[in-house]
Length: 278
Image 1 (spheres, one colour):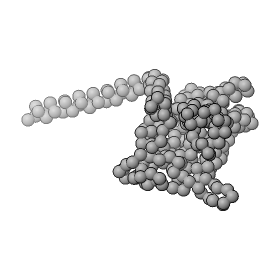
Image 2 (cartoon, one colour):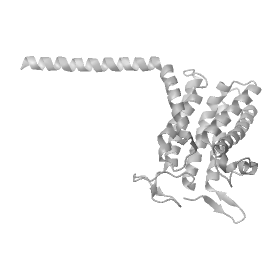
Image 3 (cartoon, rainbow, N blue to C red):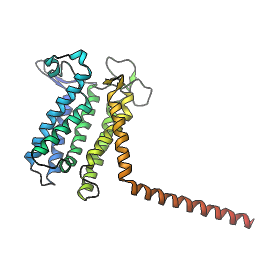
Image 4 (cartoon, one colour):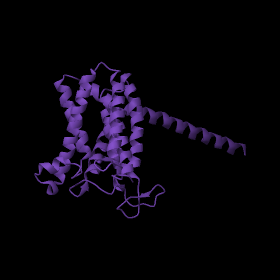
């Protein structure tokens, strides 16, 4: 692992920070391409983006400090100095960013659901780079394992899961799917704002799958906060998707069931004929 990419003595360049910057620029580029497809003004979109980034950082930090209040107290410097007192809540950041963006769109009389679909694939891009950066810097450590894919982390005993790499690959899949869904929304095959629900569902699924193999957690009432929130989101949005796609699901079950029934019936008739011939 390489937490410090370059040490110049008077300044240190951290690996995780470099990947975050790369992710930010690639996300900005993708967002710019997406916005060119719309009637939104670029200045409105990027104003909302930067404000929501600030809101994301603030609320993510606020939730983390609240859940670790015994270590922070009312010390404002500890709240601000993230490098010295690291920690941020993932879901606090996400919901905080979306809240600020929602308030911003209302203030500019923009439609939140119209805009959010174009932001989801860039958000996935940032998360991909963030997770890969966490892997190379050793910022996220997995639990002990004998699995084929494993490695040793400095300061931790035994071989560990490559949990941040797993999540990064999942989010890379999310980028591709979200980008394709965006064009389906533009063709009016899905409703506006659908990608927000997909993003929350996919994020919850990823955390649900890999949270148990992470070494460090943010706890609430003795349980992993990310896991609890992911479970609630996953169940809620899954029920919504089942209801929304109910006609397609029922049609698939009906057609598939008829196919199976016809196959079984044809095989039964074939056995009866072969039995009579004998």
